[in-house]
Image 1 (tube, rainbow, N blue to C red):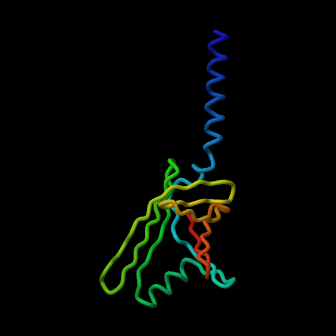
Image 2: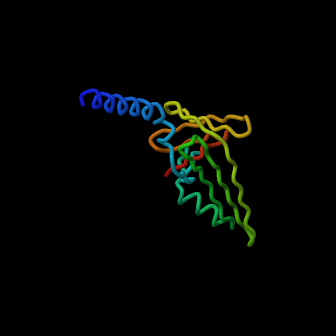
Image 3: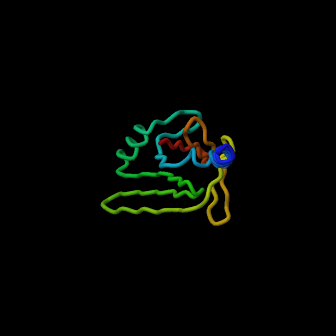
Amino acid sequence: MKKKMLLVCGALLAAMVVAAGCGESSALSGTYKLSGAEYQGQQISGEQLDAVATLIGVDMGMSLTFSGEDKFTLHTSIGANGSNTSSDIQGTYQLDGETLSLTVEGDTETVQFKDGKIYMNMGAGVLIFSK
């Protein structure tokens, strides 16, 4: 009986070690929607982005969905004048601390994952995605 208990405890301990090693990537699981931006040091809220889109007559959306298998999908949609276009780009990801690497067809972009948000530097500004 004692041997059986030790085996069960050992198996549980091994499972916990494996799960802890896989934990960072699974911290991302789910869908993150474009929720704001930063441009020239100014914060732009999601509501402000929506207002600008409405002002210019465009309906747009962008989201990142992460699965537990280290895969992601970037979904974009844009509509104007009664037509709608959308696309899905799929790739793999790796999370190391606050550094999130997104790879599509061999090209890797590095973004920041901080405080539950994704910060994607686009050169002129930063797009912010939240759950």
